[in-house]
Length: 440
Image (cartoon, rainbow, N blue to C red):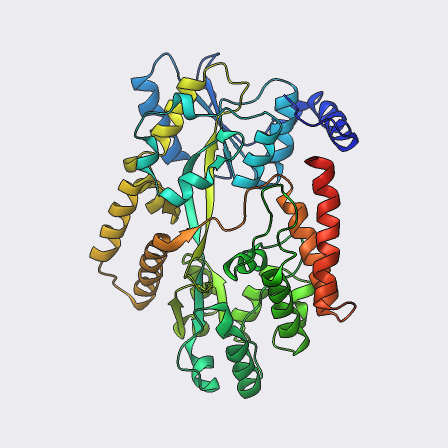
């Protein structure tokens, strides 16, 4: 099952074997649907209970009625615990049959032989049911089709039009190359900041995604540092210069995305990269700012590609019923089920059928208030953004380490400890040492 036997991996295995000894206690908690009989398909999801209990139970009840030989037992887990619980379950050989994962963790588990390659089990038309870009993102170059796409989110630019007017800016930037002039004009004429993009290693991946949009290839075919390139050096210099010129809040090197939200809601930030649904929070917490906020397309690179965040459903290799497990995953992500979940959870569907339905509903909607109209406009813009969106950061095992290395060296450059070119070289050296040990 484990493909690599370096000292790091042996140490990793020992840690999780120890955790496996207490896996029973780790699995206590979350939402359990205990009525299913012994031998049921085990489904694990991430932080859906209790808000979506009714939705999930209705989907499962319909499935159980149509598949009495393959009933489903549902367990919901908190975001922060799924990785350790799943790895503990894998080592204890008690893994679920279907599990809700994000692409990086799915790729990490697949690299250790932990996920089923779904290609031999998929119906011939399966790929045509989903957005092509997210279907590809649920695959792995070596491990095959390791997951089925489920729900999606995209970031928009939420723009304080009052600040733009004060700054004499007619429209917000659409490309990263337009950001420096925009940020400079906002700063000089209002004393506020144009935007906030965190460089804290364990926070948002937006900065890493921006590099991809600027033309940076993060990793080459051998998993080595592709960002040590002219494009990479230009991207490092872009963020270093913005910070050193005082065009980014000083806290971008010490605080995460939460600080961006605080600054935007207090009227200190002209542009916030966030999802459409966050407008509800702004309307509640800062109605004055909400009243002058306009949802705009997200910042992109020259080719106009936006980022999409993806959640998937995977089938662990230990499942004794992979065909039934995949069939349930396809049922949970079919058009009608995704359309309903998108309405209830205020997310976007990966199903093409569901996406068409959601867009039609939004276009036909007639909001009763300006607040509802604002959210409807943002949700419709989000759905349209999917047409040119893809998962920008490759779901490579160790991608969190890559982000940590890149951000840490970029912080040093921003703070004037090293040049941006030195930051690129050092980050490349550190990543390549890790990469060579993991992928000799």
